[in-house]
Amino acid sequence: MSSASAHIAVPRYSGASRVTQARAALSEWTKLHSLRSTRWSVGVATVLTIGLPLLFATIVASHWGHMAPRERADRHPLDIALAGVNLSQLPIAVLGVLVITGEYSTGMIRASFTAVPKRLPVLWAKLGVYALVTFALMVPSVILAFIGSQAILRHHHILEISFTHPGVTRAVLGGAVYLTLIAVMALAIGAMLRNTAGGIATFAAIFFVIPPLLNILPASWNNAISPYLPDSAGRSIFSLTHGLAPGPGFALFCGYAALAIAIAAVLLVRRDT
Amino acid sequence: MIEAHGLTKDYGDKRAVDDLSFTVQPGSVTGFLGPNGSGKSTTMRLILGLDAPTNGDVRVNGKHYRDHSGPLREVGALLEARSVHTGRSAYNHLLALAQTHGIPKRRVNELIDLVGLHEVARKRAGQFSLGMGQRLGIATALLGDPSTLLLDEPVNGLDPEGIHWIRNLLKSLAAEGRTVFVSSHLMSEMALTADHLIVIGRGRLIADTSVDEFVRRASGSLVRVRSPQATRLRELLLGPDVTVTSSEPQLLEVTGLTPEQIGDAAAAHGVVLHELTPLQASLEEAFMELTSGDVEYRAGEVAVAEAAA
Image (cartoon, rainbow over all chains, first blue to last red; front, side, top):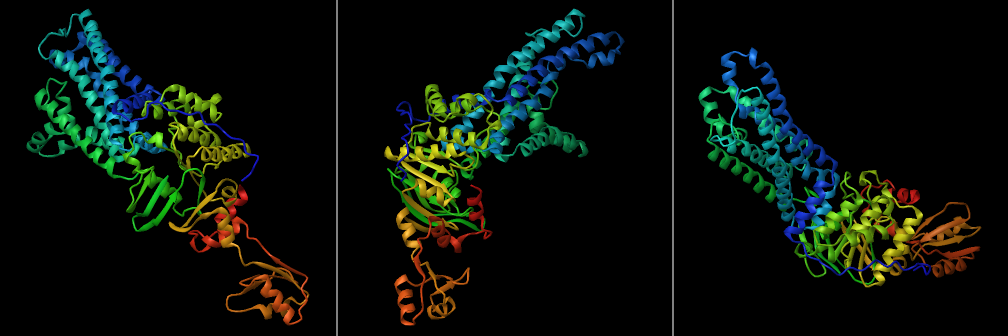
């Protein structure tokens, strides 16, 4: 032993010391808001959700005079108000995947599971925090999108609809609920695959690739299968024209999300890190 | 205190850790030594519950790691592989880990100051040098003021000042009665810091002994002999368990015989000796000798790494 060594005093600590679910959630909140990718994805999703309906309302209003009666009949104010949801689901899903795969690609997951070795609290915390953040941002976004697009349309005295009209509240808030469940499902897919590219590709396959492929099948098959796919079931929450009624569609979509979470949870506990 | 019993880990059909049993005692620095690829990092992951053992069992402070309700208060770990999100600042990284245990911001700031990262604490960790990354890892390990520390290759990438600091830190932590378990593939590093050694090769336990005992056991028999009649002496000495090498005309290096036996043999045959020196093997040589059959990649990796350090 070298005698020249000076003692280094590590400051002692004797305060709180247990992992709880609430503490895991606070930790995940810190992790989420401290990354640039979060601010970008969430910002883009908000801008799209609010901005696209305003843009579409402006375009429709300015072209209304040149549109044929049949074309006019095809326009629905809710389709315009919720146009952004279709696009903002992409940044929300990408961030959902990244929330967990970003930890695997950087090695952070080892630190996370060393701090919370039972692991499941980490998954619940990630799901809960990200779902809450998505919901908290998307509820005002869809409401603003509705109010804004209606203000533009009302100015031109076309496609007016009130928030109290049957089904409108459900559809508008349903847009936010749909995006929240998309967030949850993408995160679960990311947890299963542990790989960013694989997670995003799987999400895109389920929501963007498979549904149009079914059009190749005979119509009777397509009609029997399509309404029960995640994409279609989810859309029935906020759309007026889809296969399943909003209630059953919502229940089925929740079922898919629960299944994805269950698989992710089992794999998370069993696998080596 | 860390207790491993029959610890075994297979990845596919490759056995990374093979029936490893050892105990790491509090109050001293225990070096965990082995060539690259010998299973050190795997053993560390098994201790932390990041990987599940195929067989056997390892406990820290009497419990499986996963069963501790506040693991950061029990065990602090620095893993060899980076475990930091590159997009997050050092401060937020530490804060997020601290929050899992309800550890306050004050503690996070204390540790940032202790490891000397104050200036860069708000910078993204992806921009850190290897040395800064190691310092952040040390801060992470010390966050919960744990009684057991597990450090995988802690001096990697540190400048001489940083290495000196780590050595002092490890000794200080042990002097406070903590269990300090440090892996390295560098013998010279362990010679300076460790009191006790656990040596593995190809996942198997090779030695579990004090540093002094380790050198004594592995050195022993190398004797340097200088003689104008070296060729004749060589013929006299050669036997079943004796090897004689020669790098210059009048010089022999003999293993398998004591200096007394060589001197007696020379005298009996009237051979003149100019030098007869028992050589104490360095820790490095002792390590090489013990693990020579167990180095998985026999490209002199250890020697190369040592030369570079």
